[in-house]
Image (cartoon, helix red, strand yellow):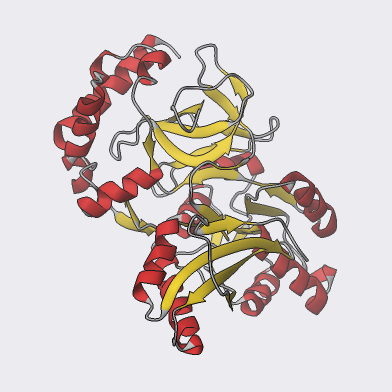
Length: 400
């Protein structure tokens, strides 16, 4: 990556900082002269902005925390709201580069895509929808849920591709095979949400059992597509409009090649100026440029922050705090996640106050959790107590 690229990066972020007060303040606090950067080491002098910190800044100065430049605000098409909540402006084309994944997979005008990602508040559904439109494919905007209806739609439209979480894809595939038989299955490509653990083995099983090719990308609501599979090797090829580093999650210093760390992204588009943005996801570099920038990312290795990804939605510890604060008779709570039958199963463990109505507390806690996190807890259990230092969110090993 030559100096001209860093000079361009410096110019666009210096311009953004003139009308985005939070970005200007971030540079000022760090004593960081964005206009003078000439190499990756210069960029690395800027402390990482953590996703949790972005939530705090937006809460203090809603909706965008002072990060949206004036020019970007005038061209904003949508405002997405991710759990946290985090507000993300949608600018330019809504595909955010995801069409590269579809092109690599050979998706085109002859394809019908069943898109099961949410179209409500979060960007996933529209991101996949617009990317499919860019390659000429036909989209069925199914959204989430309604497994039986979606399986029927899949069969009757002869859909050739599915965009879904791995767990929901498996539900649809099994239901289709069990109800209509293998001959009704027309899907050739599946674009799946990533999972921790031995996801590669699960994908090989899916490809064998359901005669599909599986594809995946790494994207965040904050910066759009970061990297995607391209059929040219293991892992994800980094999108050319992103500069990716793998950094120590505590210090923000880039780690040694091959070492796991936090994915830190700098977008070359400063309309939403995410520079040295810590995604909270953990991975390692499979290939790096001579200057240290990541060219290929490994599959995700886990999380470095306190948030957990549950059924493709981030859940933050503060959400559990909000459930406790907003539920009369609830003294403490903990969210416990484990994988059951290839699906994230979330249990709320509740500690009741003396004299509390258990049924009323359960009902209100479940409802408030869903309102706060936009996913449904699977069950509640009552426990007598909870250690003061117990984590508010915990992921346990798989069962079932």
